[in-house]
Image (cartoon, one colour):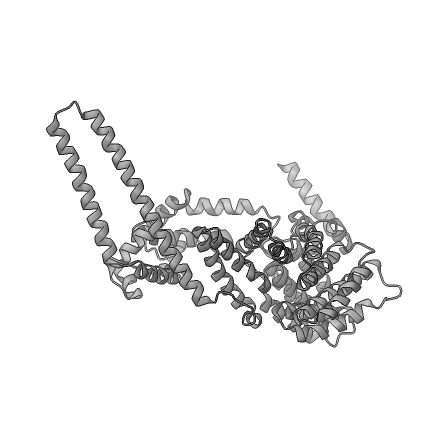
Length: 562
């Protein structure tokens, strides 16, 4: 143990004697999100802090954001703070660009990304660093293009193309490579924006220009973008054979780069072309991949929405009511996401099924499937009951007839009583009323009602403007448990998720955790937590900390304020 500690101390001392460039050389070759880089980034940050070198400290925090998997925004904020402490407008602009890029590419939060790019623009628009100026301008155009502001985006990309296209004599090879990537990416987004404006000839010229200029050099992903756009142009011309070929060529690059947004776009357009060729089975497989992206990342591009309409049509044709209900429900979720992320475009999307029709179709499908499942259940019970009676008759036919008759009579009476109770339950609360009440309950869940202390069935019923009998019936039927168990599950799952995601919560004691989720008694909270998760709250926190395995403790993330 002492020997290991001595080795670590010597390693730390040797790190502090390194030049700043030496630190970066040690992890430049590593992939993004590789936690191993922090063994060099941590001493890099410490050295820059000690020497009050704000330029290097800003770069160190930027690198930390790149290699961190769960704390990118934390490091981005530290980078911003340090950049402002430096007083260098270029550093401040670059820091805002980095944070905007994290919002855009990592979290797909477009409005916060645009806000950061615009903040950076206050510094970059008058910067003498023309590369920084146009890099910031490019990112502003990028968000505008994705949000559907194509008329505003095209002039931005035109300026970027002109700047990045022009060679810079004597420039460093890395800068030359980045400039060429900026040029190709600007061409790609200008072409995509022209497609959005339905100026197909202009888009085709830009695509051809991009393919020509990306043929040499390490620009595989950029070429895939141009193949994608050429496929979309072919699809719009009705040349589905050419479109499928272009999309199939483009797809591997997006999958390799984990570019799920462009991959889903290619799957949709290729599926659309396959559908028109009568290859519906293959088309449906592409549309299902679109849904898998949405389920995993909760993200979708506006043109891709139509994949769900085609999946609904296919489900109707195959008479698969379960799938029809699933894709109808998914389409409602898609519209909600599009309404939030793409407000400008959401009103322009052609919708074969509007929201009202979708909700009505969903309710109708749910009722149909409920009746079908109920009928199946009754038939199953009847068959099982008949088999049981036959078996018992065969077994006991040699026993006393009186005992046999009494047993059969008791079974029949129980069956009649159960049917009578079921009939009363259906009369008591209709399917429509139950669905309406269940939707209100789900709405309360989204508002985290369960965190309120002293909740009772009566209090929740009052919130929902219903009676306790109806509420208890719906919770027992649709949530599969009593009100008390349902409330405990919601509270414990809430605390579990916070402990899993939020380092601040992992610093709380058990009593604080209990109060935060509505428990007045810490012992009851601990018992409920262990029943739900199979471990105590403290054990859960310990295991989560071990899972993170960061060189820096997740509860001790460095910040510029330190």
